[in-house]
Length: 110
Image (cartoon, rainbow, N blue to C red; front, side, top):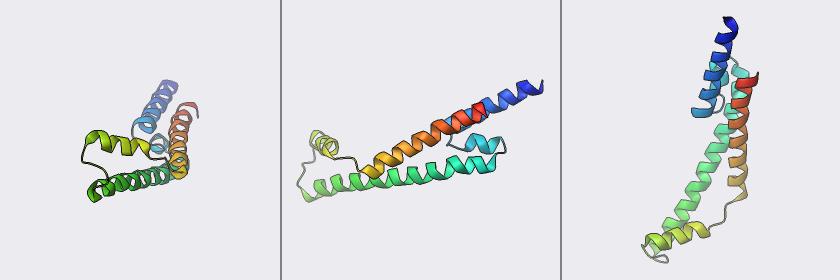
């Protein structure tokens, strides 16, 4: 009976890590230090990614407000698609995905 309960707890932990935030499942299982190993880098990566996205959005908005880009959804979409993704955003996206997948797998397998 205890083994069934452990598997159920691991499944709930994996779902928490996959659907709520990386490290949430480890925290649920009482593995606080492991939770921080997933949560801290994922949080920093998420913040860096959001900051980069905000910078890119502000650049397009500034061009629209300055009048260099017409207030046309197709022209704005072309501006958005034409931007290059900074390396920091790419790296932070990869770090977040690695933390997310690693957290789910660790919750299931450990």
